[in-house]
Length: 99
Figure (cartoon, rainbow, N blue to C red):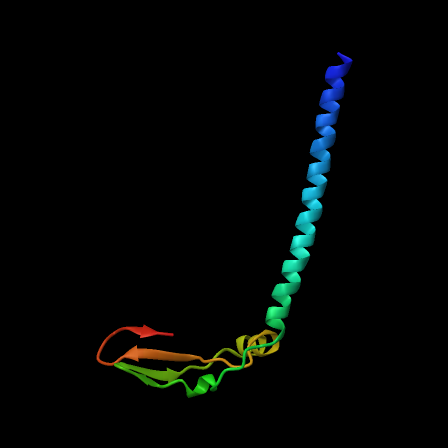
């Protein structure tokens, strides 16, 4: 009976060691990936042109600028957007539109 309990005990010990190693490996992998992703977003992409230069006329669609609510505009400027476009495009002679 004692040898069976030693076998079970060793099995549990191995499971704990493997679990601990997997946990450590997961933490290290997470840290490395987080650092890599953070470095990718550290340098913002600069656009070759301002978004305001996006054309108002695209094939049979006509665009008009729309105003953003002040809170939305302030949030975007503060958090992540250095340029944005708020425009509605309507199909000429049709009922379809896209914001």
